[in-house]
Amino acid sequence: MGKPVENLADYKEIVDVIKGSGGDAFKRCFQCGLCDAVCPWNRVRNFSMRKIVRQATFGMTEIESEDIWRCTTCGRCPQRCPRDVKQIESGVALRRIATEYGVFPASVKPLRTVGASLIGEGNPLGEERKNRAKWTEGLSVQTFTEGMDLLYFPGCYLSYDPRLKKVAAATAHILNSAGVDFGILGPRENCCGESIRKTGDEELFKRLARENIKTFIDHGVRKVLVSSPHCYHTFKNEYPEFMVHFEVIHISQYLFELVNDGRLDIKNEYNKRVAYHDPCYLGRHNGIFDEPRAVLKKVPGLELNEMADSGQDSLCCGGGGGRIWMETPKNERFSNIRLEQAIGVGAEVLVTSCPYCITNFEDSRISLQDGQDLDDDPSGLIEIKDITEIIREVI
Ligand code: SF4
Ligand code: SF4
Image 1 (cartoon, rainbow, N blue to C red):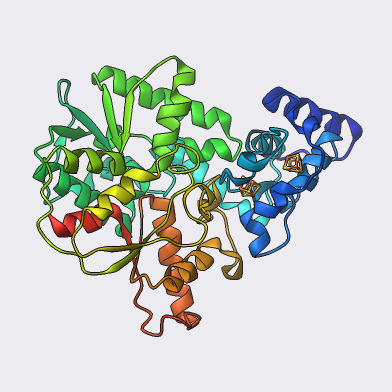
Image 2 (tube, rainbow, N blue to C red):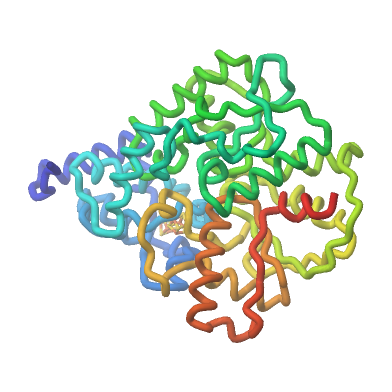
């Protein structure tokens, strides 16, 4: 049972927890409001990070409110904040308090099931651990053994989700075509833990991370190839907190390497107009903007068009910070805006390189088509693709 937050001692605790997690960063805020000006929420409804910061400074956070769960950790406002207020870290600290008190608004309740599935089966999707390698059926994919060049870590969505299993298969096909010596961990792979950490469940993150690290060490893993920018971020920037270091490479970077080294031969044309969406955790959080574009530009026939809000200013799909598991009303989805932007620049295909982005874009595509809101796209045929699916078609 959660404890109600109702007295001054509780509010003092909020201030202390925030201090413990992000130092006194909140106090530096001078209420300029730049964070609210760039936050994607303000394109779909009112939301104020500035107000959350203000309330937290005085320990007056409304811990029961939905607002502390809204931030997708997209990284836009920390990039702009003149006072380095560390909105993401401090926001996560508030979620930690809510988690401890068991205060979850209705839209956030799916997190309980997600947590149980992560503890029991190592994935957030309620799937069985023993089925983690099922996506490889009919494909040539080995189990990783010591001495192999590369561990391929597809992550949870690519292992289980029917749409994203196609991305895992495309990746395996590409790696085999390029003669890469790689293997997977299958049922020994756990969720990387990035998103659950952002929901404030630090204990579960540590448990998942420690298990993965032990498995990597036991198997002699040195280099890890990932499909998800969220796995990339946590292996590269968060697992070193456990005093370990593994070389990590995202598939978009690896494709760039394979094509440049002449290991992957692009033989076919792809005669379509394409818009590339920068996932927050690939671009803004980790600076990988150029490689995916460079790979797409190598494809003959492909016309790459830039959307508004791209690169450093990329519009979040809405799936970071654990939001991928929370309920977002249809008319408040950032991904709807992104689809309209892609269609607006004449794209026939919206391409990206993140399982959360693809999930959200596919959902928006279906709901916008159902509602026939795609005014500029009467055919309703815009496709959503991972970059590997395009490369798979042209090699
Ligand atoms: S941008 Fe930074 S200083 Fe300005 S209101 Fe937001 S948190 Fe405060
Ligand atoms: S990190 Fe992104 S979603 Fe979160 S408050 Fe800042 S701009 Fe909004």
